[in-house]
Image (cartoon, rainbow over all chains, first blue to last red; front, side):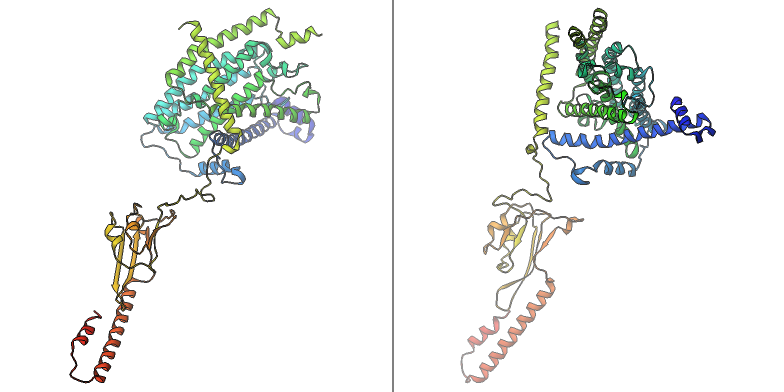
Length: 371
Length: 186
C-alpha cells in the first residue's frame, strides 16, 4: 500500500506536501471502502440469487414483487433489517451479545483483503495469504459461539456449540485440502499461487488438472468448506427445523443482518479460494493479462476471476438446495473418519508426486513430450 | 469397518449426491416445472358445486325461516313482518359468515331455492363481528314502519270500502262476511 502511495505522490506532485503516511492511510481507507462496497453488493445480490435458485430448484418462483422480477428484493430486505428494532433479551449477557455479530462479520470481511481479484487488484498481497485466510475466518467461530452463549437461550446455545464443534473439526480438512496448491506454487501468497497456474497450458495449467490428487483435493476442499461456512448439508448451527434458527435466534435488526452478511461473505471467500487455488484464478487461458495496459489487464482478469468465483457460488447454492441436513454424529463422522484421513492421504500423494516428478503435473509432462 | 466398506461409503456418497444434483438441476433449468400460482393475479378454477359464501336472492325469499332453524351454529338471523298482501316481508336477513362452517344445510332446505352458495371466498375485516353479510340494505326498523304504514293504509281502505258497501247495501243482510273482512288485516 505504501508503494502505491509513493507512486501516487510521484504521479501527482501536489501531494508531495502531504506526509506520506497520510496518503497511505487515505488509500487504505479508500481500498477498504471499495472492498466493503463490493462485499455488501455481493452479499445483497447473493441473497437474492440464493432465493431465486432455491425457487427454481423447488419448482417455485421465488421473490418477484419488489422491482422488475424481484430484482430489488435485497434492497427491501436491507432496509427492513436496518429499520427493525434491535432487541436484546432481558437475561442476555449484554456486552457479549452486542459484540458477537461484529466478530462474525469482521472474520468474514477481513478475508477479502487477500482475495486476488486481478493482476494487480489485491488489497494486500500478504506472503502468508492462505494462512491469513484460515486464521481470520476462524474469528467467525468466536462470533457464533459468543452469540449462542450470550443469548441465554437453549436453542442458541446448542447452535453455538454445534457451530464451534463443526467449524473446529472442519478447519483441518479445509487447511489440508488447500495445501496441495501451496506445495505446487511453493508460496502461501494467493497471487503467487494464481501466477503458478498461468502459462502456456491454458486451463490445463490449473491446479485442478495438475495431478489426480489435486483433482480430488478440489472436491475435498469444496465439501469441507461447505461445512465450514455452515451451508445447508452441514447447516447444523442453524437447523431451522430443530433449533429454530440456531445461534442467531435472539438477534434482530442490523445485528442479525451482520450474521447474515458474514454467511454470504464466507460463501464468496470459499468460492474465491477455490478459484484462486484450483481454477487458475484470474488467469486468462493462453494469454498473459500482465502484458496488457494496466487498466485493461486488470479489468479483464477481474472479469475472469469473478466469472469463475460466481460460478462456484452458484454450484454451492445448487448443492445447498439439493442435499438434506446431516445429523450431528454423521457430521462428525464425515469429518473425522472420512475427510480428515482423505485429505491427509491426498496431501501425501501430492507431496510424493511433486517429489517423484520434480514438480511437474500430468498436462506439463504431456506438453513436454511434444516439446 | 473394512476398507472395502469404507470405499463403498465414499463412492455411494459421491454417486447419490450427483444423482440428487441432476434432479435439482432439471427442476432448476426447466421453468415449466413451476407450480406457484400468483394468487391475486391468478386464481384456481372454482370447481362445480363449490360451497363458497352464501347468497340469498331476497326477491324470491319467502321468509319461511327454514334456513334459520336448520343452521347448526345459528349464523343466520332473519326478521320479517307480515305485509299488506298477507305475505311475509323480510326486514333483515344477515348471515354471520365468519361463523358459518359451509355445511350447506340451509341451501338444501330452502323451499324457494333462493339461498345459494356462490364461488366467493375472499373477505377480510379487522374485527370478527364485522364478517357479516347483510342482504337488505335498508334499516330493519324503517322497513317495519313502512310495512306497518302500508298495512294500516290497506286496513283503512278496506274499512272505507266496507263502510261504503254497508252504506249502499240495504239493511237486514247477514253481518257474517263483514266480520270476516274486519278480521283479515291483523
